[in-house]
Length: 116
Image (tube, rainbow, N blue to C red; front, side, top):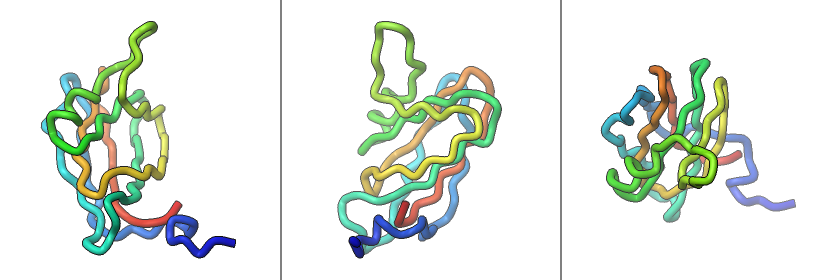
């Protein structure tokens, strides 16, 4: 059995951020994991709405904005799809920028931490 910290239950290690998912996607917000983390971190992401959200994440605000786009047939996108009510733990860059696109206003909560 591994003793890796990423194998443990998710532990919040920072403030929870609220991103209002809209069309167009709002200005990205940078969310950092705790200081002694490696170049990556875990984030708990919750889509607290009845709408699908397209989460844009990147190392810069420009990358996050470009990635917050709806996916259409025949045009793959570098976005993370959050179905209504989704709760995801994602391993991403430790100082990632986040924004979200949705056709109707939706709330996306993001908490940095560690674990699954």
